[in-house]
Length: 68
Image 1 (tube, rainbow, N blue to C red):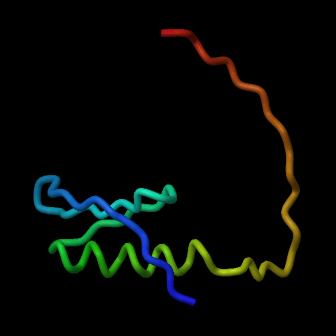
Image 2: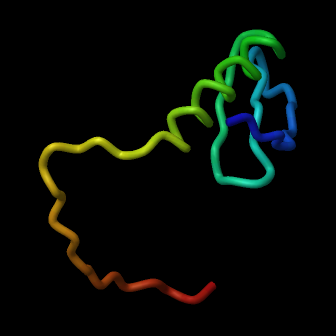
């Protein structure tokens, strides 16, 4: 199944960054095309069904957060 997603691309120093606007996934590359190719691969992995063989332990932790 194909899905059309929006992304933002910008340059940071020598690297191009590509970020999907619908889901929290981003990637980078030395060229704009490389960054977009890497983002496509990252999104494919993001939407892949999990195939873990060992179930993870889900735990809750508490952290102190200071107000700014």
